[in-house]
Length: 238
Image (cartoon, helix red, strand yellow):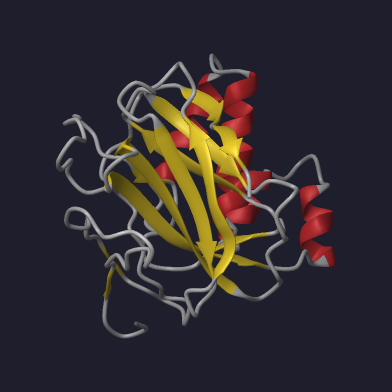
């Protein structure tokens, strides 16, 4: 991947058959952390409704996204309403496809479509430092049949260094830029989303949000203008 561009391809969750073709993106992978990801959901199939924009994960499309948290927050653009998607599932696997966090059921907020988040619950084990994990965010159009739209990606927990901690505590430094520079994508996106939730009329926060989503490592195929809504509602936590 250091020499040739990486082509991101989806590896479906082994417990559920894959539906639809993956969304492919090319990116120059500059590190050994090159990993395939499904950044955008496939076109709707079966009972899944057609939408103008796809389901999208706010993640790097060819490298492992990093986090400082043992139970990180993941952000997504969801173009569906709760009536169209009555059930969602989130699962985390290790590199050998073993379930580290079994499927957790959730429902979408009422205000959809928009940007939503999923945070690993406190009842689940923390991600271990330095380990790569693959997660799946699945939206079921009909829970009775395997018709679903999904995105998936990789996450690695990294340790907080003294230098970064001092920089993050410096009020003259921007936390999102410090995190983005180090590839700590999940925390950077979560920070920017939290800023926007606290003040959605702040034009500076909107500019920073859009700029982050246009970074080459993420480069979403579309940047929706829908609002940032908040967390999904967990209904079953094994």
